[in-house]
Image (cartoon, rainbow over all chains, first blue to last red; front, side):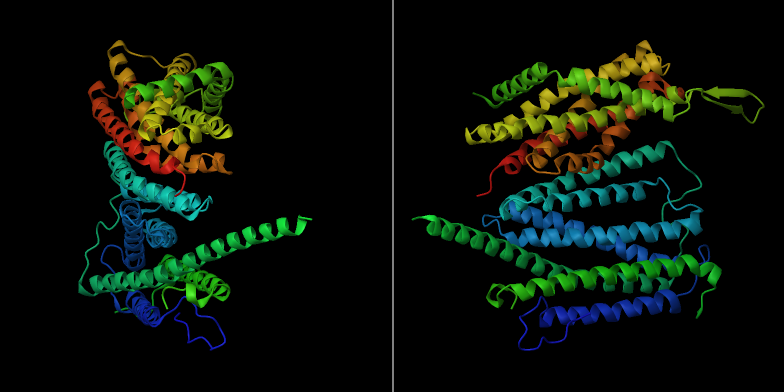
Length: 254
Length: 50
Length: 243
């Protein structure tokens, strides 16, 4: 996954020595996750082999929540620091993109776990429902980032939206949890219930969390740099358009 | 220690690992490709990370 | 002028515009009514029946059972249309820009526009509740009127704040109409849940006790306050031109 050193004629890419090191570490850890998740770890007493899905599911969920947390933090840093640095905005955007991908993975792997364990793909459990709503919220956040306008307009709008999600999520979680507690569905436990993790299982989960966190840092660095270059190109395009316009007027003048 | 997971159990397990790997791989590939495309158009002086 | 006087002026102006355009009465109300009829088509209006464990026959009128939820769904759909309209009017003639350039306090604009939206929503909800009574065989017990009224007010303010906030965010962009539902629906999920439960207990739907409704009103109130304050703080940066 890490890039080889670019040939001298090529321009510099989004990779640096640091990202290459992180990339290699992430790949190694992902390999470990596969080995432990599918091989070394034992089957669970209650869940049998399906517990293996959790070694992917739990780390993706952790990562998605981490990514959205970083988005909120960077949104606050953009809005409340004097400099209003666009760097924070790009980190927020890159982090949200990664979060959306991993939240989708969380939902899919969760369904693949729910089907054999519960007998159905979806349960109207508080955690699942909140996660689904969160996913839609950040898809909307990314759509707002794509609306256009100047860089700082985009940054302000999305930073406000990123912070509003912080108000929204506890309210959603509270209401959904309460709603479910009234309509208690005895056949469906919270995800993870009935799992007794032994040492090796816990270790597999731990490997997954480390692997995905490294992957997150690596993706975040690459993606935020790409977003920075998009902004640079936007500015260049704007300058070029202004210059072309100026030349036009000069050319038309008799 | 189980070396091979029975296929009747394994369907969902393998599917979830496959989905995860394909999604992560696909996303990573897109991020890298987009980064490369942009890097070819932008002056090296504008790349703050170098 | 104080912040609240400005807010009142903005609200009065918005309501006057709406009264003159008659869009709410001529288009959005009929739309909400049609939605209520469509719900009846989608859900069996004959009711379901069966035999319980003791051999007793039972029948349930599905529509009466889900009526509280349907009222709020119809309200949400109408909210999306109302908000889309309110900000289309603003951005077409640049009225929002004019207010901002004139140095009007953004929080006052936010509260004013929210209040105007809340008034329209509230009237719409009253009509929808009446439609539920007429079309879905819903009874409003006398004891539940207070809970029903408080629920309507609390939920309406929550919806109006969220609608104004996200409407302002998306105002002036192409693709606004399709973006707004995506942004608003996940946020107002707590209102849909809370208001539906509260109205269920106000109407005694499915034997829900009246007392069970009040905690949900608490949720609605917290929601309204959170977005009333959060929205006022956020509205400035949202409508501000970039520096």
